[in-house]
Length: 65
Image 1 (cartoon, rainbow, N blue to C red):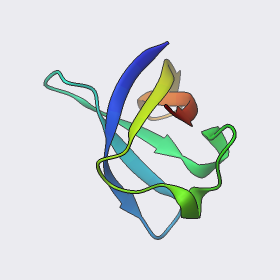
Image 2: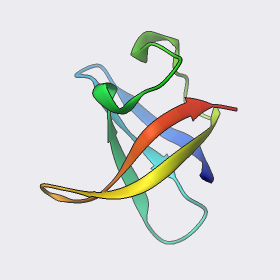
Image 3: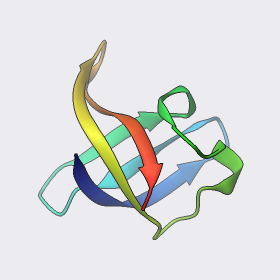
């Protein structure tokens, strides 16, 4: 699994992960594991699996590390 940092958490149930490269990955609250959306904070380290969603690359299986 890849690792990154939560860049932004939006109140609408989604956010973006800074992957350490030029691109940020979208994630939705439905892709979280072992944590509720309300527990996520900007700057928090997470692991994730990169996938292709309906609108392009996204993160799945997102969990804090």
